[in-house]
Length: 167
Length: 103
Image 1 (cartoon, rainbow over the protein chains, first blue to last red):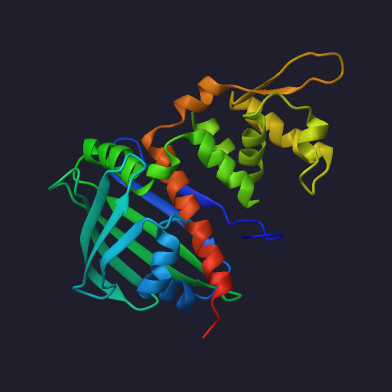
Image 2 (image 1 turned 90 degrees about the horizontal axis):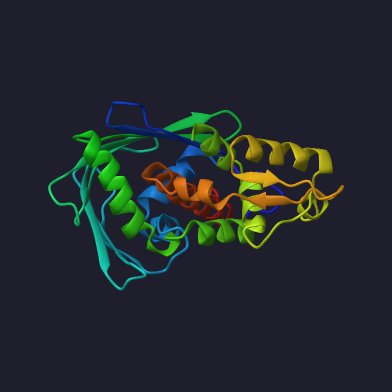
């Protein structure tokens, strides 16, 4: 857990009237390392589930033309699955992937991730997701991510408690 | 709503809210776990107050800070979940990057 270091802020923006979501976040480590944490399945598994150990990476081929499928056990006992393809992956630079929550089938978002090299051995990660419609964006993020990727954090209180514990 | 998101964007303010979820607390007691001056904590509380996430009552000089649960409930919207999930994830990535050696 982070101790004295201040956590780098996360910026999330969702423009009015456009089915996009953008995020931006810096890391105090070089771009090669941040990229490796995405590409190496063992490393990826350790952070993508945000500490929960009930996430299974059925497939995770972080290369151009590769595919992925993750399954997470929700608190409600249901399994939530996500899949997509890595349309392009350029080492230490850029990736585009599709994303489908299987509970919301045939609605696919396209997400690009940019790994930007910063001075001082630091990295900026930028994400841009495009959804087919506004409803898809709000619905996929609201239902898919909330119940699936984040079943353990259903209650905001729990989330806040967890963050307090991490400080 | 925007103010509330901005207010929640800071880890100290989230920790303050977490503490308040167990009951009203004075500024002095809130400042204690942080390596911060009372003034700095007061500023954070002001931001939370402006975002309507907390209120302060006039209780002689103590003026304890109270959580406003209905404002928090409104925030459990899709974008808030998106933010919380990603924040959680990226903290987890920070920890991993700290642990693994550079190549």
